[in-house]
Length: 354
Image 1 (cartoon, rainbow, N blue to C red):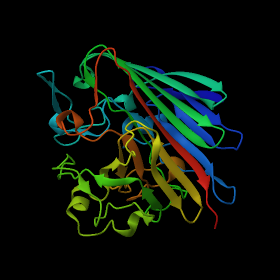
Image 2 (image 1 turned 90 degrees about the horizontal axis):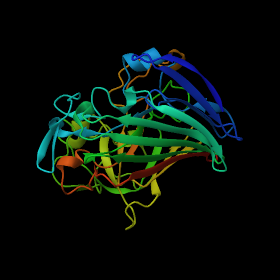
Image 3 (image 1 turned 90 degrees about the vertical axis):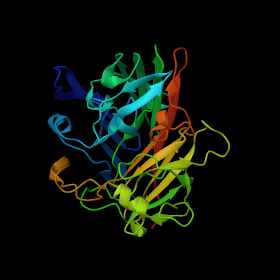
């Protein structure tokens, strides 16, 4: 493991980069600013290593304008309608930073703070323990929340995220990781040829502001049926109300947990056919937000000068369902004093044959 400086955050705190490398050569570079995964180098079927996540070369770019490239997201990943929720009879008002809605923790969410980082190495691999104490009232949330997220790079080419949080007052919590992937590894083409399989037979329909609209829907007969291997681009241009509302895929999929809520189960399998790179996603979470890079429009210049055009990256954000504090039918995101928030997600990388 190597540690180096990445500059200074707007508040004056020093920011570092930690480079994790396993014995197979897989490399993850992580900064304690927002817990951002700066790069992730994995091999293709010919043994060539490339960076498979989008992002920037400099801290200043992440500070100035970033669509959550590689970041830890909290307190609440995804949207809360109109930035309001009621808890124990009291209404709380959050920052609205996505039209009329609250998104990914607000104006200064967990992606924009400096976490305390503690490197480690054990028989599971090597990694970082990232800790942040979010004060009572931050972005409108009640309670002091102590969040701890452990990143582990394993010997078998998996990147594991273990989330933990406690609070001194009741508060909603929904942490996730927001890396944009492109398994082609060159940042020079779209992701529409990636072949994905999702372990989900329902999805959350949304309105034009991406807030849940009505009951959960069966994926059968819709563009959201990825239960069999299907290219991301196969149906993305269909004339479908939900695709119009999301400007493509920007929806939460309800994962099939096999009757075991909270179990670590397979959520997604992704294959990039030209390189043979495979990514599997396993999670304890009940949902996964599938985002097809709809808002990338060529205005952002990323690493090594790459221009990120429309749909040049996809995200698979394991999490609870959107707007859960206002949706009593959804699994609860409420954390109370004396309870522990725990969640685990892992991305495992491998290759397929020709």
